[in-house]
Length: 150
Image 1 (cartoon, rainbow, N blue to C red):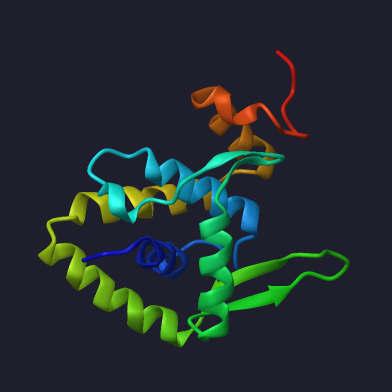
Image 2: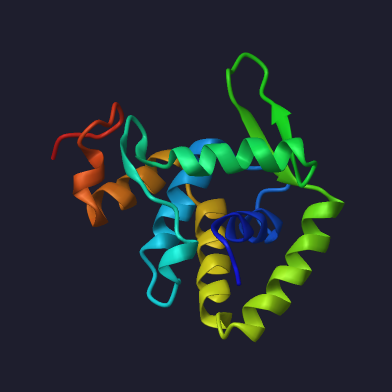
């Protein structure tokens, strides 16, 4: 059975930004994914409004755990208090197993949706991503420091 951290591993492994993604993009991506039909409820992260849109403490915990398990690599960003997260060989190996499990669990559509989200997030700017999330889910803009008044 696919768990929420499996989606995070799979998302990280999909083609996109080779240098890795920042935590806000990961948060927004998995939030958008959690809204897709066909994603089992037990494998979704819970989100609340944060200063940069939807935030999941569970997702941050999984990022830290997966980095500690050397499943993904945190790459420090000079002058920042956060890291980028990028896939490593172990990520791709695990992702292949997750894809096989997704097929067995009849979750191929969900994996395609996740891949589409990765492609989208990798192709847009930070502001455009947040504007989309806020437009589609305005209740998550409540605490935002980024949200622009209409």
